[in-house]
Image (cartoon, rainbow, N blue to C red):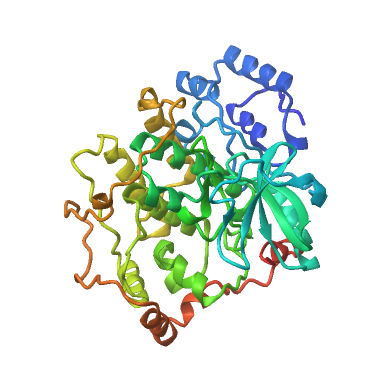
Amino acid sequence: MTIGSNEPKSEQIFHCWKFDPNERPDIQQVASLLDRLINNNSLTVEQSKNLQKSTDTFDDSRELYLNSIESSCQENYKINTSIPSKVIYKKRKIYSKDLTSPIRGKPDDKRGKDPNFVIRKIYKGQEVACKYISNDEKKERFFEFLMELSECKHINRFHGTSTIEDRNVMVFEWAERGTLRHLYEQKEIKWHYKVRIALNICRGLIFLQVGNILHHDLRCQNILITESLEPKICNFELAHYSDRNGNSSSLSIDQATAVDALPWLAPEMLTTFRYTPQCEIFSFGMLLWELAFEKIPYQGWEVKKIKEHVINGGRERFTFGDSTPKIYQEYKKMIRDSWKQEPQERTSFVKLLDMLEELHDSIRYMFDDHSLDLPDKAMDSLDDDDDDDDLELPDEDTSPVSINPLEKSFKNTDQKLWECFEFQNNDISELNAAVVCL
């Protein structure tokens, strides 16, 4: 691919961002173009500055990085990800003899409930998590999908499959601190670590969006945390590829999962039943709120009440305490920009990344990675409800409900809630279907 011409134009530099690698110029061609542009005075001072900035983040639709070169193509967009290639990633078969028990056991070496236990093992000197699965040949393409996602360090790495006591297992990297939800329920997470966790989750989500992949179930329960407080996006059972319009393909989930995911769903998801990248941004905003206040959104509310509240423009409250650092204003803005009622008015992941990078840099001095011990959470700090925000909750009927009334309410009035995952899209590729076969 050549970008040279007798009359160079600054727009030709955008050839560097071609989705097809074969259509991009090499570095010598870029240097030659820049040299001729400068010599011909074809670049303004501002354009010259912009062209010195770089980004590793691209979106197939170009919506994220062409809207604003100045704001979205800055030097701090240094993401350790790459566009997923079309190479088929073969699942790795791990011999059961290579999975050994840890020399020193821990109380949480077995997590979860039967039959979905996750067991800690050692594989090639590394701690790994072995998750039981059923014997289903249709999952082969799903395993290949997981291998592809493992390119990104912000996504829980999939090592391959094996067997333990004649049962099939998937082998993932081990996250010592468990889920982010478990961590905030048990430990005090300081604000600067919350910002870094949010930043790295955002990086992982950009990796997914560049590959036209929508997670569908963003919440702290689906984020694992390592010993060094690094987040890993996990649980891709509902993940799906999006089409050229950004819509996800058809998807079916059970009632329990639909009820669990409701507090994080965008309002248009509850009315039009279509999941788009803007829905993913909304859910990320709800995840940021959950991380900030360390509790489930709309906790104790019935399904119908949550649905009506969100559809009518209601959101959760911001109840920052006096001890919250000044950075909470920027954090609050990110959440509000993410959960706006109109999908087209919501911010993008790239802009959120920019804000998180800037926020992270402003508090970098607060980090001490040599001391990552988190204090246990005090019991009296679990439920602080201060009324200091202009996002108003509806009636004060927030008493907890038992599981039976919840299920009854769901069945009687919200039958379509889990049907909202049944998107009418006939253009489903073979790999799309494989992604949700687990």
